[in-house]
Amino acid sequence: MATIPSGQQFHTLAADVSTTNRGSATANADRTIYTMADISASVGGISGSGTVDTLSMWSDASTLTDSNVTQDANGIIIPKRISHLGNLTTYISFPSDNKIELRCDSDLCLEATGSGISLYGNGSLTLISSSDGIQVWSGRLLTPKMHVTSDDAPTNTAKGPVNIVFGTAPTSAATAGYIGDVIIDASAIYVCTVTGSASNATWKKVDLSAV
Image 1 (cartoon, rainbow, N blue to C red):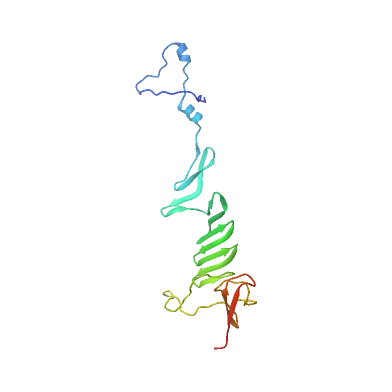
Image 2 (image 1 turned 60 degrees about the vertical axis):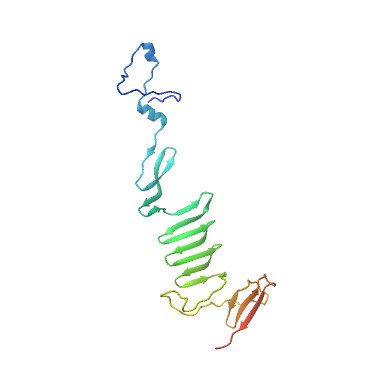
């Protein structure tokens, strides 16, 4: 099959114009006949196939195929993750049914399931919010005010006291802490009144006695 020279020019003719060679043999010798197959071969074709409701992608420079992204009446369906081009280790993923994960530099930062939301810091679990309430690990729940009464409890939620888990008491009145930190152990309630590093913070306590 011939390849059309890149500088070749083409002209179209009306349907009723005869394309039979006319003129001298010399004139005809300067004419080159190309077919549509020659044009297709010169331009280069696209191969491959696709599927309805599936986003296409290039598998190589001239071949289209299906990607993993599809759509239905409800929207776009992504099979596993969404990543940023400049930082592929930070992404949102869908590792299993009814679960979403947000990872930052590959470390798990947030996990959402049908039963609740879990937050992570530096790869370690720090907070869970679920039907059982909010649970905090190795950190602080920072809020300007916490006020819970039976009237504040959501509808159909069991009403009861606030439960604060026992912690480890400060080793001294100047143990590092943040103002407002509260720690309870079996004998006292400790409150940090001045924020500071070790030897610079201030803690006060109230001893507990039997009711």
